[in-house]
Amino acid sequence: MQKLFTLIFIFYTLQGLWGQEAMRVERCTAIDPDLPVYNIYVDEENNKWVSNEAGLWEVHAADLATEVIVGSAETCLLNLPGGNADIRWLKGTLGEETKGAIGPDTRITAAYYNEIQDQLWIGTEYNGVFMFRTQPKLNWINEITRRMPKFRSEKINVIYIDPQEDRHVIGTDQGIVVGKGGRWGLEERYFRFEAIATNGSEVWLLAEDLLWVVDSEERWRSINLDLEKTEGNIKDIAFDKDGRLWFASQLLTMWDVENDTYRIFDGAYYFTSNDVNCIAVDKKGAVWVGTQDKGLYLIEKESAMTVTALPEKEVYCDPEVDDGALIVKINGGQPP
Image 1: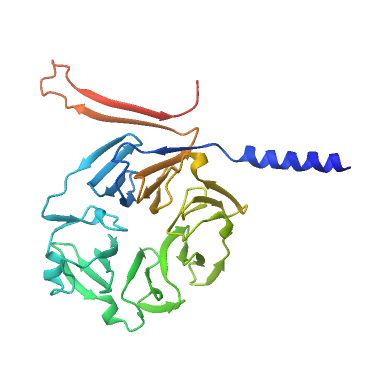
Image 2: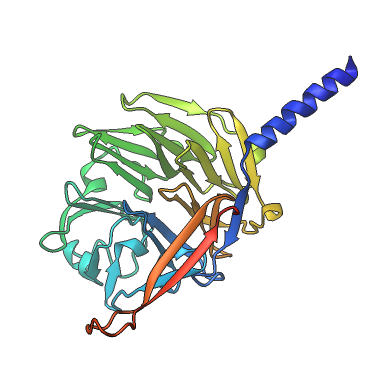
């Protein structure tokens, strides 16, 4: 009987391992692997925009990127934490528009652009949140925190806007402010909210290693994480296309929420950073991880294949001359 139970245990253990597809972890060489990564944004066309200490890059593959030229007198939204659009303005414009409330030494800690309503939200370390229009030029609308007494802290950590649900979420050091239909409320005022992720119509909120979920009816529920699968403070969260939650502490952990199973990525998986800044998931399910100490990582299924073709030399105008050239790179895949 004991042997039978042992065999059953081994069978289900192996079954669980077989059900987990092998994952490939790559430390990206497309950008300097020793520089901190501050922001990663994946647009609707699945282009990956990565900001690091050296500038802004469009990353095509783990070993291929194109530098995005931003003028020395310009600021680009994609260079800021949470930046989600290629919007640029001259340095000093924010200070001029806000009459000095955003000065040259003001640290911008969160940003978000609502394209439907043309609203640019800028969160700062000590001065709260400011809203701007971008068309026909950048101009200040109002200062959100001074207008709303519900804010208990002017240190803004994260901003998320869902124009489809008319929902605005602003995470601060003392609670999270949620606005919908023109009404605002302060929730969980004793917690520092640091990251936001969406899963369908649900918004998942991270505060000091705790999770809350808010559904489309504004109902809140708390979620228990297995903190034995983390190490140190959790800094960011993101969902992949299969509904698994990725969260970064000094370890990188994937949580299959539906089956309540975890996978930890550490040195055994060649993930050697213990200081993650941001996580983003692209349209194909690949996970991009920006770190403070080891640059950019790419994590994807072992079977995934990426083909990248970029012009190396433009075609000459003369149709009789064959002088065009492409750079073609193929990563991953399975034989044959």
